[in-house]
Image 1 (spheres, one colour):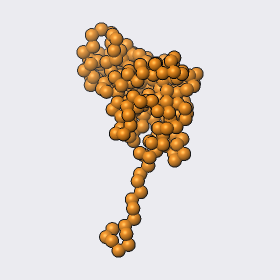
Image 2 (image 1 turned 90 degrees about the vertical axis):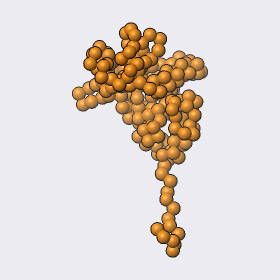
Image 3 (image 1 turned 180 degrees about the vertical axis):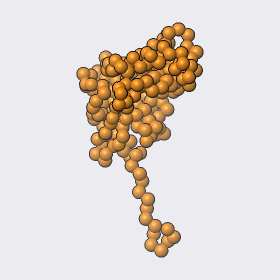
Image 4 (image 1 turned 60 degrees about the vertical axis):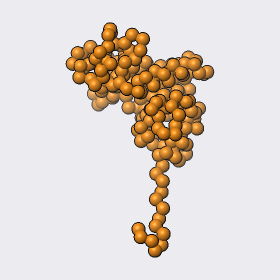
Length: 198
């Protein structure tokens, strides 16, 4: 399938390039893979990171753009990622990191390229569940920084996924949001029986 990666804001990309060119920023990063990389490290596959703040009982969701994430490639593989965030003064470099979500993102993107249909690639974070998904948005022409998950969009949970949710298995938003709603809705505490100690 044609997988569309929305263009990142030029100032966000510039902040990552500046950080990559700064020996101090790379040396102070807690990413051994980036510090020990042989050859040039280049930002690749920019993805807007949206955060799912809440899910209503109807299943509709409120999302907000939290930043842009770039995979940092050295040779044929991603060795780290760079995060940028929007500040009152514009886009700013936030940090480098490595770990399972870097390889899981790369795997999910490769997996998405084999699916039928056309999608725009984004990331959707569900902080309350410590969950990150590849969000495959059906409107390829949409502004990657805006919008919310449509019922027919696909979400691919990245490993490690929360217990009971299969990583790297695509789910339609309409199927996955009710599961997430159930997980995020607090279970009511039963009232004590009359005459029993509280």
